[in-house]
Amino acid sequence: MSEVLIGSILSALSTGVGALPILFLKSTIGHRFRDTLLAFTAGIMMAASIMSLIPESLANGNYIQLVIGIFLGVLTLTLLEKNIPHMDLDHNKSGIEFDEKALLIVTAITLHNIPEGLSVGVSYASDSASETGNLIAFAIGLQNAPEGLLVALFLFNQKISKLKAFIIATLTGSIEIVTSLLGYYLTSYITFLVPYGLAFAAGAMLFIIYKELIPESHGDGNEQSSTYSFIIGLLFMILLLEI
Image (cartoon, rainbow, N blue to C red; front, side, top):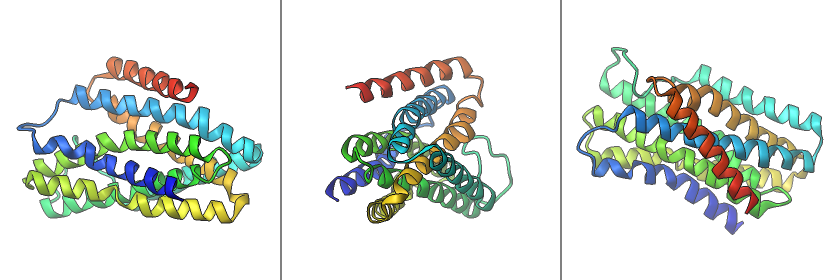
């Protein structure tokens, strides 16, 4: 219990750690740095999904359960995409007024953190809970950091003070603590859900990688550097898995 609580808190607080530079920045960061960071986290999450969550799901269940769990994860993210506003943090050209736009972004990011928190909690309920849980919490935390920075930068560009932008961005990740505990308790006490839960986490992460992180990292003409960064992130996570 203590491990999942610590892991979920650290993973969630990574959003605030990522947003921390907003307190010291005098201008926005460049697209190249942002895209490289997003691609690196995509590589981290890809390795975590393919080499940790999916094998762990198969070890706790079978292929059919894996397929069902992955598609449930993808379906959940698809429904979130269709039913909550999703707006590009840097490329949005709409005429939405400040208050509405800021609310839409914060709501979208907060809701997108729900399956990420579930992924962390479920991972701590597996047979190799300590290893798998810590790695997934680490991977989600790395993904949360640039997300927190982007949200804080968006809010700052909307004339919100740096401190308020930092606090709001940090709070968007706090829902992961609740959903992590929910995922952990569900799969701990209803054990047959473990392989489904692990596969669900993998499906959710794969959706985020391909639907969000990779397109975002290729949106400003930085495809080559982002590709290299993705591969480095992938290899970095594989190294951690092998240690």
